[in-house]
Amino acid sequence: MRKFLSFVLWALLCCCWTTQAEIFTSISQMTDLIYTEKELVQSLSEYIKAEESKLSAIKSWANKLEALTRLSTSDPEGYLAHPVNAYKLMKRLNTEWSELETLVLQNPSEGFISNMSIHRQFFPDEEDEKGAAKALMRLQDTYQLDSEAFSKGKLPGIHSNVMLTVEDCFDMGKTAYNDADYYHSVLWMQQSLKQLDAAEETEVAKGDILDYLSYSVYQMGDLPRAIELTRRLVAIDPSHQRAGGNLRYFEGLFTKQLSELNQEDYPPPSEEPIQLGTYTRPKDHLPERDVYEALCRGEGLGMNDVRRSRLYCRYQDRNRNPRLLLKPMKEEDEWDSPRIVRYLEVLSHEETERIKQLAKPRLARATVRDPKTGVLTTANYRVSKSAWLEEEDDPVIARVNQRIEDITGLEVDTAELLQVANYGVGGQYEPHYDFSRPPFDKNPDGNRLATFLNYMSDVEAGGATVFPDFGAAIWPRKGTAVFWYNLFKSGEGDYRTRHAACPVLVGSKWVSNKWIHERGQEFRRPCGLTEVDQS
Image 1: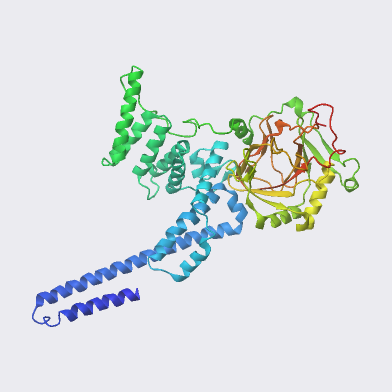
Image 2: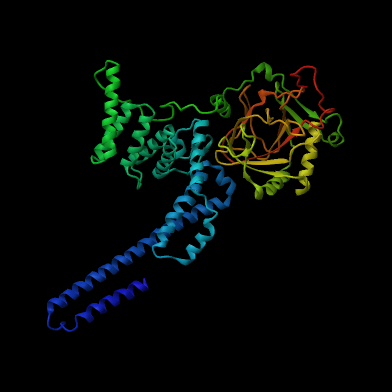
């Protein structure tokens, strides 16, 4: 502001100086100076107002962000356990902080820009924000949640003040639209329109929402509704060229369809609001998608009462293992065939916290083996971060490995390192096999014979381990572990063990697993008499 005031004074002096020779002989020119000064004062007032407006906007940002950070830092993991909080954090750091940076840069603040420059490298980028949006859509699909439930923060068993604004819903819709995912684009654009029509304050233009929504509805094959929405857009903005062209195209296409059906009149578009279930979600790469997602919701379980009556719990000392004699493991049957058991009190709270502490600095995006090349790569169907821990890292890892050997009775010297995984917002691992299939089953230690999976956290909603082939769902319980064999005693893969980690709806899911290999088990789990012997 000091520089601007100097400029104003300089301009006034220049103005007076250049007219000094005529100043006393020409009142008109002096009058001009009066108006020049008035114009400069008005300009100065506008500048001050702009500065005050900017400062007011920055204060508003600061107050909002201070309240948000006070809430989020009080319990970071609990805060991020809510998927909407995680999405809005991605959005804030990728989009909204950039807007604040632009605002401050109008009159650069060195301290702020310096801090922004230092921390910019750690900010999520556009891809991160896009990934967070897709995670919400994944949860929406798996748990059959409508957009309004998400927008109002109403998740199963959870009610919070976390809200999605018109802008948030609009951006979600655009993310889907830009990926040609018109199914989700319709759901989120409709929610954005609904909130706008409810008089929610927003800078998003209704015409923009209708533009995206009408074309997305057309792509979903609903021509009557696409025509009705496009007409609403044209009514709002008659000069909208694309809308006019789309309307003519839609009406021409619809007329052709009616002609082919020997109909003359347009059937009216459905008066039912667009919501979850209005349109059918397109099929994707996963053949058991419906079964998998139903199990994640606790539906379609394959265990009947007769079979359940044959499941037992027991104390397990693994043939009088010295380390289990005084404190045998509590073993519960989770499933009969293939046999899946759960062990209770496998890890203490202190052990789980130490393992998490060791893993956190090493967490990286989890990888899978490409079925065509055998190369490890990231994949959209496995969304988690993982780390591998060795016995040399900490005595607790050696204790856990020994405990797994004692509990299972299997050799762990040839097993893989302890893998720790964290599933955050929408984190999942779609149906897969733990064992390798030809031609990638040539590990010198043999194939993955068995899986020992530790649950290191409770999960408020979602996050089950499900087996679509036979309809089992196992829910995380902190400190417990589940165990199953991936191979028959013949060494052939048990394809029934194809399983998945359901998306985490609310909470943060921590697990650690040990993949136990065939080598060293020759006398601990000898071959059976048939190809499909299990025990």
